[in-house]
Length: 391
Image (cartoon, rainbow, N blue to C red):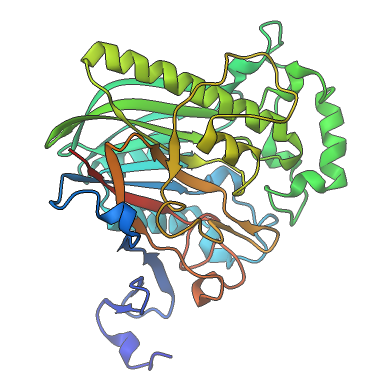
C-alpha cells in the first residue's frame, strides 16, 4: 500500500510485473485508468515467418460502454463516481490516447459528434462512424492515424437489411435500456422473466419482421497504409447481444462476411490489389459457440436461418487464439464474465500478428468486483494487436 507521503508527490506511475501502469493524480487517493501494453507473441509459427522485420501497424478494438446505457441500477457494483459522464469520458479518452495505435475500432460509441470525434482527432486521427438504427444513440466508429493510413472507400452495414421489406419500421423498436431488469446484466438479462414479458409487448418474436429487427450495425473501410503502400480492409461491428436469439446473431455474422466478401472484391477490382482484412468488434459470442465457429470457418451447420446469400469463404483467424489463446474474459460484471470481443485477420499469410494487447487475469485486483471501476471505465476491456506485413 502506498504511504500517505507518496500521494503528495506530483503525478507518477507504478508499473506492476504485467507491465500495466496505474496512474495516480496529485493530491488524490483515487487511482486512474490502467494503460495496457502490447506483449510480443511467443509462438514460433507466428514470430518466425520472416527473418527481417517488416512494416507494422497496430489496431485496438474496444466496447467503451455507451453512456446512454450507464445506469446505477445496471451497475450497482461500480463506484458511483466511475459512472458519471465527466469522469468516464476523460478516463476512456486517457486510455485511448495512451494506446497510440494506428486504428481504433470502438463499439457502443455515443457522444461521437459532441465529444469523441473532436478529442481523438485532436491527437492526429480522423474517423468514420455509423449510428445504430431506430432510436439508438450509439454506434461503431473507426479512428485512424492520418500519418499512417489514407481512407480510400467505406461502407456501412445495417443488419436491419435482413428484415423482410414489408416490415413496418415502427413495429419493433428494441429499446434495450428499458428492457433490462434492475440490477441485471445486458448479456444475460434475456433469462429474466420481465424481459420475456417485454418481448411479447413488442410483437411476435417468431415473426421474422420482429425477430430480425435489432438495430445492430457495422462499418468497413479500405485504407492505404502509407509506408509501405499496402491496402487493408478494416471492419468494425457490434453483433446483437441476446443469447436467446442465437439464430439472429448467426444471421448477422453471415451477413457481415457476405458484405465483407463483396467489399473485398470491389476494392480488389477498383485498386488492382489483394487487400488484407482485419475484422474487429463485440460479437456477443463466447469461444466455441455458433457465431465464433462460423467466423473462423465460414460454415454454419446448425440453426434455421432466414434466406440470405450463400455462405462465403473468407478464411479468418483470431489474433488471440493464434498467439496466446483466447482470453478468459473481455467483459467482466458480477452477472457475466466471459470473452465476447475478438480481432480476426485474413489467413492468407500477407499479415501476421506479432504482438497483442495484454489482459488481466481473473485474480487481478483491478477487476475484482466487476467493471466499470476506477481502473477500467467500461464493462469491457480493450483488446489489440500489432500486425506485420509479410512480403
